[in-house]
Image (cartoon, rainbow, N blue to C red):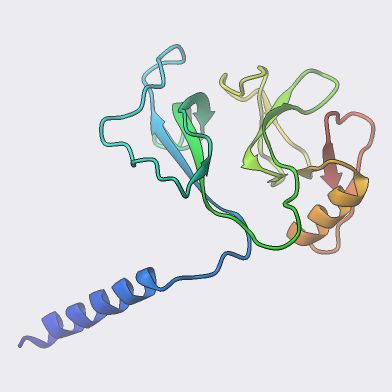
Length: 178
């Protein structure tokens, strides 16, 4: 057998074995799915080749309108999105999560996409559905939390050495990590 073909076959077998090996969930495992839509007012119907919904999934079943930076060769554009959670963490009750939520006193919104942390520079939206083009970006790293104690724990978990801060301009469970 050709040595190149033998090496390729060995690599494929190794990839299949790694992909098939069960990995225990130590945190929620989510799959954010998006597809580009032609215009802001285009409907978000399920695509014909959609991944079938499984009883082990949780999260967002329906497709919702949004904006993302990847369409248009990185210039951004309108998309339909959903988040499938396919493995849940075991142990204590999970931390609170959010989708599109009011972010500050200026009436702007951020989209946690079913999670609870956003890196500095994440988009800020002008609408309650997070579906219009972003109007700005977050300054520091931020988390969504039920209270300051949970926010401190989340900040430390994602950005070690930081603590939660709410300088007064953030609302609705949003905290800066500084």
